Length: 264
Length: 326
Image (cartoon, rainbow over all chains, first blue to last red):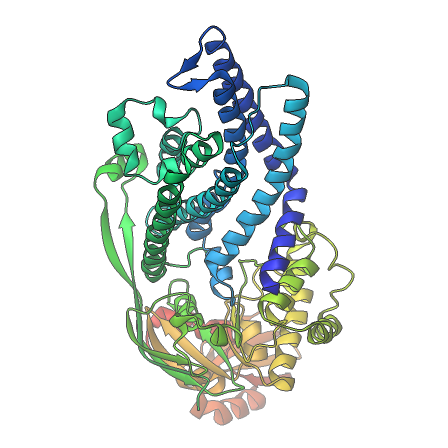
């Protein structure tokens, strides 16, 4: 455990040294928040609701979605393919530390900084803009939302780790990752709730893990998913974590066998 | 029990081929050919605990690939391998704790942070308690004089300073086996010597088993008694360095300093001249003719000084790889 704690602290140190990445990421997050907030705010000015979302619900969705973008949809595993291609992975493989644990710790360190920062941003946003921010309908719903968010974080990490490991096969895996991220943000509900989509699209998405990252946790928060649906949402998240874990472990094992430890 | 035992070790890489230029890249999007490259064909050797062995060979001979298989980084495509009682590729933590692999062109130190931070991380990864960590730090500091620089961010260090830090970081956990790939590459002569002295002490005092590859013949001559010569993925020679020289080069170099200048044509009577500047001449003389030839030179020429030496190692190695077999 001591190794992961030391690694966590060093990752913080490193992020504070490389401030520009962090500042740009926060800037991007604020830009998404402002643009989506004012878009929905103006769309719903003279309408009672859109597909069952009142103005207050939609704006709460946008604000909470910004939080979940920082908590769930942020990751540092996009560095794994270059680590593999340039042979830097060798350093890790030669030490008694799990590669998954190494990146999970770095991810946790990066997220913890982002979470702190996004809280400050949100507080300032709420203080100056005074949006109609709704609380969860009950304490139980708040608890289920927190649990579902934690599972979404685990799910997304497994997913992005798996994509990173594909770097064993394709040296330039930014291409698949870019496509994946655009599709993911859209289908996770990271721009708007996915129940605004046509029914056919929703049926397809129900078979995919993405809506469980943002949309379903926020449905719990807004009370759109009642207590009778919580178990199904949480169960699906656990199931997806299991599937993704098996897939990423399998890919990792196969990838290691073809690893060429290049560049040395 | 040997520290390392390799039997018919082989590694074949699948290398994808791409055409030249933009058209080649475009074609590569749709179809890509690949070919097999046998980096190591069949290599068998064993190393006893406490030995210091050099791997010699030209670029692409299979030295680094062999070292990478020993470390467990690469999965061998053939043969068996046992290192410190383990199968390296399994990467068991108890194996990883017992060896270290330092690659001259790679770094494990965190670039943005001082080296001391990575030392602390490695101490945690290798389960060193605080007392042992402090002791090791003191020992390594005494040998490599690290403390003036260990609080400086790694990116601000020179190559030589960084290499010292890398080596210290890799040895923090007192490995029984040290694999060194081109440890002196790019270093100045002073730093090369520091590093060589350090490796010698490590081998003598701590009985660390060391395997190294180097293109620097001074590294090999100073550090190693035993050499393994690899070429085209097979072992050409495995034995003591003097035996390699004696076996492959059936001649020695006789050098005479003359009291007065003599023309080259006169000196050529004593054998093919390797080096000549009027007052100094060097001949390549077959081993069995050394005594008669030396006495001939001493009798017929105004010799001020005369030495009989093995051929320079660089020449020996060049011959081996040029002629292809030992």
